[in-house]
Image (cartoon, rainbow, N blue to C red; front, side, top):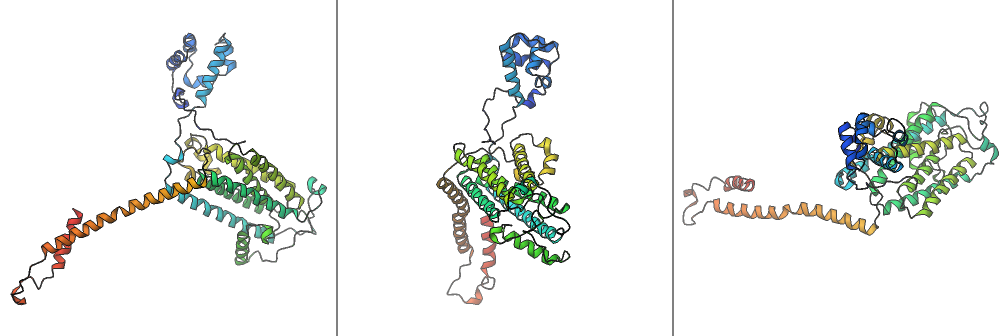
Length: 433
């Protein structure tokens, strides 16, 4: 697959890059001795090569003056070891040791709400741009190489949506077998929500003319009717913006939301599906490009809308996972906050997520085990409470006054004071102790 997440090699003999950057020439010479290149230690010290400079050396630097290492095997061996240190970071723990069940579920809920808000904002923006659709008599369709060459297929747009349904059926299958299914689902929703928020901006700032005069009509809604715009936006949200659900919009061209959905589904399959599911990987790309073609064949979007949507989705998805799979996140915190405002909350202290798979039966069994463990912690207090109540009852009987039935009620000085007050105080103290 194009995107892979490989676990650490487990070779602790390779010094971490952060450690090497703090070396002086003496430490570099000691490292050369340990690696079997001690004959070059004096040369490196004379040239003042520190750990920071060592990480920048290339094969050309080792071969040419002033180092001029004469043995090819030594040049190759040093290059390999330097590259290993250059790409070595402290091992990041896996997710199980860092994220609790409560944190994971709260992040899942947050990502779902984030996606819902993003889709709703996108739907409202679609209504606004449809209401201010350019007059088709004054602004004819723009020249487009593909649209001018492909006849309009009225069924193509719905075919693209069915392709999207097929792709997300494959995504659902991957999530069923992926051990980190909740984390993967969160990432899908965050990336999709980010893309749709960006699409709101591009749709609103520039209104393109209708690609085909036969497909769109002006929306009978007043731009100042905010209640009507919100109502129509919610209708689009409920219908997922899909033509198969009866949703019809115009003016939301730059860039294609359908292309975002189809491409994102394919990229998820390429990223998280098992490697031996090669047929699914190939089918993902085939469906992706057929979906884009059908979008164009329907003349619902310009070619540039589809091309840019594919490129932006690919770049955002790749950039997100590049950041996720890199250890030094702190150095890129500003860039992360700008590109993905919710990134640090979703991924902070998460660790690397490897592609591990399990059957649904194992997942269900593990979930029941967690629930049972939680219930055991909760019910463990019940025996203690029962024992405390029994001890309190014994203490109450011991502290209660003994009345002689032969004596009159007036002769007992304790009858007028209820024993429950003293007994209650005694029970509370005994439990606290």
